[in-house]
Length: 332
Ligand code: UT7
Image 1 (cartoon, rainbow, N blue to C red):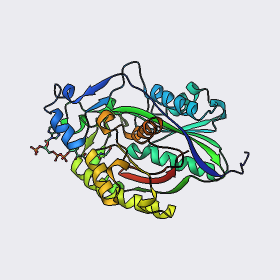
Image 2: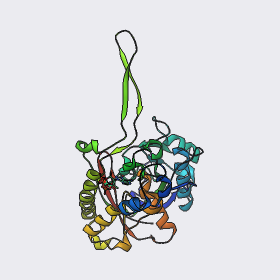
Image 3: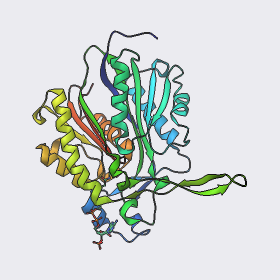
Image 4: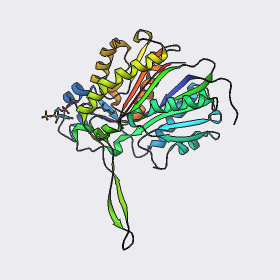
């Protein structure tokens, strides 16, 4: 294994998948007892994109990865590592290797990482560890989810929240480390607040032995508990990551949170004293796309010129596990 001398991390390209089908709040009011007014006021969501029969987790992740490689002028064969953050793989054995094959990243090792809505942040920090040790110098981190597959379309408390999507970033080895600080946390005692659980019945295998046979059940969530958790824990962990970075909130250009609910984004920004025009939100168009939400919002803001090279971004992911994390990084 060749060790590289540049052991800093630079975030040099982003990409996202474009889905053709948007489901509006009015569409959903034909499915469950809800309204555009309720959904928009309580969450900020107006529509969300849903994967079609022609799309898969792998195809969305591949599109996002391709766009990120193009932006950063990276050849697929130069990629050393692909981390695919997802909780909705096409294959429970992992979908990352199929993405690696589709991209033609023939020298890359690829694996899935599951941490729900914190997945992208956890994957970014994991990738940085491989780079800081000098093992890998070009890494593709993808966040992708197709939660529509696991949504209970008769449950108005959850079905209005989620959308499908994929986003990606390319990391390259650099003399100067642009991942300025991070912190990651888990609390399994709160696991029951947000689940997509496997449930099985026993099936006789032999006269005296049984096996389990079942499937995953749709997403269930205690919205109020998760809301309380997010509003308390997210500002705390961003403060910790800022401390590790030797920065205060004055030193950040953008607050980029997992897009779960506009009210959560507003409450966290208020606690941290970040002005509203510094908070990145695409809630209205995409809803909550789980592991995709941070790289998707990042990519949109980079491509429309809001985020520029040298901007410092405070980012936080949070959700099932429960899990949460924050990273402070400089773009470009
Ligand atoms: O990515 C993972 C992280 N997830 C999150 O961060 C989600 C965090 N939680 C939330 O965003 C919010 O709790 C929700 C948006 C999920 C719910 O908002 P809320 O203000 O906490 O509403 P609630 O659950 O307290 O429900 C208030 C009322 C209830 O009616 P009653 O019992 O007061 O008569 C619900 O049945 O609103 C009702 N309700 C709805 N009404 C119309 C719940 N969902 C809907 C709906 N349309 N879609």
